[in-house]
Amino acid sequence: MKFDLDRGLELLDRTPGTLESLTSGLSPEWLAADEGPDTWNPWEVIAHLTDLEGTDWLVRVKIILEHGRGRPFDPIHRTAFRTKFQGRSVESLLEEFASLRKDNLETLRGLDLGPDQLALHGAHPTLGDVVLSELLAAWVVHDLNHIAQIVRVMATQYDAAVGSWKEVLPLLHR
Amino acid sequence: MKFDLDRGLELLDRTPGTLESLTSGLSPEWLAADEGPDTWNPWEVIAHLTDLEGTDWLVRVKIILEHGRGRPFDPIHRTAFRTKFQGRSVESLLEEFASLRKDNLETLRGLDLGPDQLALHGAHPTLGDVVLSELLAAWVVHDLNHIAQIVRVMATQYDAAVGSWKEVLPLLHR
Image (cartoon, rainbow over the protein chains, first blue to last red):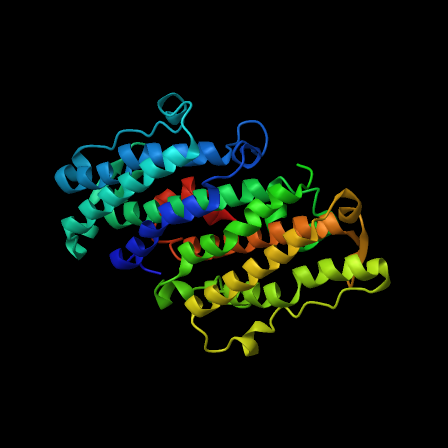
């Protein structure tokens, strides 16, 4: 599928609701469950998404529009959320994420990006030359990637509990 | 994590809301998108879940409680949804799924299953000897499995659109 701004916005709009439905009010057993050393639990995934929503995606859109390839994006600090959001409840993070996402999508819609702008190039600090439409598609897939991660992390907790059903549940084989 | 009925119910309760947030009102481009021949699109996944919600999980709980290993479960017809739900909108399926799930969980809570019942055995037509707690854990993971599938199917549509971001988006490498 070619990137289309309206189709992409459909998914970006949904992420706060999906995350809330998946995790708001969940017991600590689920929110603190991970897949082993150096893996994230659902709280950490949501904290990471909330952090990036304030510092990354839309900021990079604006850098491309204003500077093109002339000003590389700042690198992401993937674990900055640890100090930034220490002690915060998942519900409080979900609220902050939803509010930031709403503002960001209002701004994005207000930019009224056309084909010429979507084709503008920018400079990613590690990936190199990138295109604005790729940045927006990556924003969508980054959301989906982390939704799938939360879902997989929770499923993994029942890896043994499902007994021989494991055979027919492909999510437990990833 | 050992299976615990209250923890499992937390997730079973959430699935209708999560599916609705992910797919209600989505444009046909997303709802009809799949991963190639013999793969399912989001509409098909939701139709399958709705079908099984009426015919499978709770029915099997009752078979174990009433007959134990003496009466094997009926096999699942994984694609019965095609004729059963032909022409139905995803919103109409989501409504039916939510209503069936609500009734099923009310019934399940009403059964007030204790440790002795959760340890009862049943006979799966292909997997063989199974335990009631395994059936309930598999119900939870089956939900998560299909939520993850919808999310992955949508992400896959942007496999090329994300450009070099693909490298850092593991969901596109599954």
